[in-house]
Figure 1 (cartoon, rainbow, N blue to C red):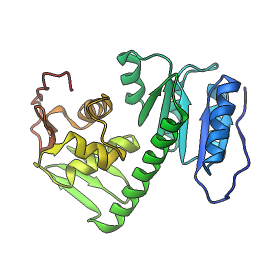
Figure 2: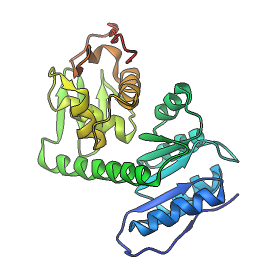
Figure 3: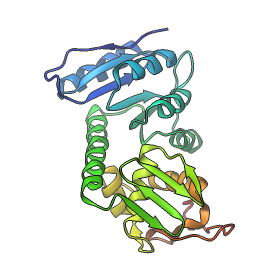
Figure 4: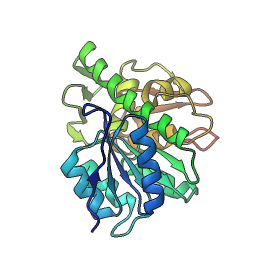
Length: 252
């Protein structure tokens, strides 16, 4: 098992990133660029090493390759999100939508398909970290608990209750639900949600938002998130057993 190890950093207070990539050349190239951008970086080269490094170093964000020895990036994502939720940017050489949706379903926040430009990777990382900071600021500024019907969203503990049972969400699923719950019944435009939750407006070019809505519906109830065709989504109080339709472009 290749254990993770930390690289030097210009600042001891900079965000800590875990880079998980089995190709040493790619891993080092990504690491060098991120260190140059001012991040602290921990490297891992296989699934077990990634989980161990996550537990030891408690990174602020994980850059995770899909195909790894030991066990793959999807299993890594499942394990680390179950241990301590953290934003995940997944790297994949497999561009088919099935793999991407499965990856997002286990807690990845975004993905970049190989070959990628490091400029894009850095931009996505900064956007995800900004989202985390915004979520913390909102938690301090707004009411601690939001209620929509029998759905409650606790900002402080980041816990969600639906129909009397606790619902376990990934960090990004929680932030998406929070954005919808802040204006219950109101239609939130896709670009608006992308900017607020992800930090950029790219809804037309990816299925990231749709994938997270699909996963959120599976956990809190399909009837709670209403699709407004060609516009966006709205959070409703929900009626048990009522399914939600989808738009004709393939959104969940």
